[in-house]
Amino acid sequence: MNEKLVHPDFEFQISLEDNATLLIIENPDALRRYTLELQSQTMGGEGRFVLSDSKGILEIKDRVAVIIDPLNIDPSNKKVMSRIQSQIKEMIVSDEHYLQAVELLSNIERFTQSIEADYKLSLTHEPVDIGDLHKILNMTLQVDYENEIERVMEAMNVLHDVCNIDIFVLFSIFSFFNENDISTLIRESLSLKHNIIFMEGREPLFECNELKKVIIDKDLCQIF
Image (cartoon, rainbow, N blue to C red; front, side, top):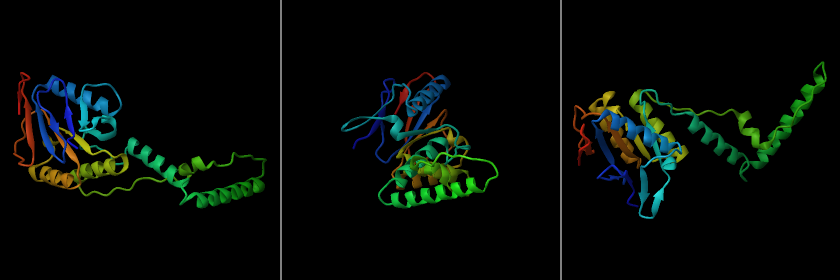
């Protein structure tokens, strides 16, 4: 599909065909500016990054996630749980589950009426709407990981499976993980068809042969 991420300030383009890119921005002001700009666009805000394929422009908010704090990333964050609840709501009213949902609502209604009848004071209630049944189920996401790098990968997998995110921008992750961890993340991510962009403020202490490297130095000269 020839997917790519570009910016009018960049003389290069980032290929997103099951690829991993290391973008080193040595100028702190530029690093902060571009990171916040892209993060804003992933939340539906304005920015100048453009994601496209051979057919045209793609919505960044639908495809890209920026992970600013890899040590504290929550695989079951608010965005994920909101999407899961929405999907469960759709499942409840689907042909496969609708009759069971109606039966459950009838049982809840009979139980509520029984409680009202047995209580010492007069009570009333609003019948549960089928559109609110997912709230009563109170389902949460169960995630399993043994260490912090697995936590990052699990969060990426959840975002992919639940929100259809397949482009991940990881900020300063080389500061927290060793060469083996990074190699594992790259290998596992590419096997799952995730596209990765590492954004760093300086050159990592170790080389990763799997990465295409682009540098914007302190004077904003671009090396690629």
